[in-house]
Length: 266
Image (cartoon, rainbow, N blue to C red):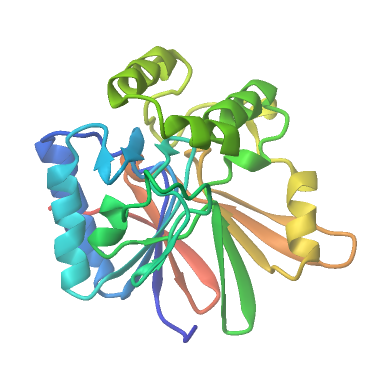
């Protein structure tokens, strides 16, 4: 990858339907991203997204239209899966990119609504190299290994068995599941709340990635910006956690540095 400016955003928590303030902020943000030419969304892009046979839960028509216009204008958009982005495809390579790696079934192999508008679906993580630095981008929740309840719920709702069974589950039932788990999955918060130790990303979960040759891990999920060195057994790397986009923050990667910026709403 050449030395381009890359925009990174995590935890957008876009809600379905017409939310004038949210959708206007999205339009402004995507317009600002045009200067970079590439946008990587690091999970929880949607407050809840479940897709089945090319149809999705919730009225995301307006939001998809906003993304489609940005892609048509020349913005390259890639998306990795977060803990709220359930089943946005089932593992097939399309002309527009490689979709989420999971089960491919004859009765549910249509293109994702996201890939149809030109968004590249990358699965749980994506990696790229720029200026000799290798980057690993993901949502980050899988590295919060002390949060046992979350990891169990993640396996039950997003593991391969659940993805297989979801093919046969009516979308009405999926809507009921989402409502039932709202008590656990917090709404998007500001970027200044207290994070308890058991919720944090653990270094030992990142060491294998650093040892594999990655220099910089970038993720979200915690809704707060933080950065620190990760010491592997053979080499060292850097972890950067992005702030919550729904709280107004995002990252810009340029010349090996990540600058945290705020969305301009004017």
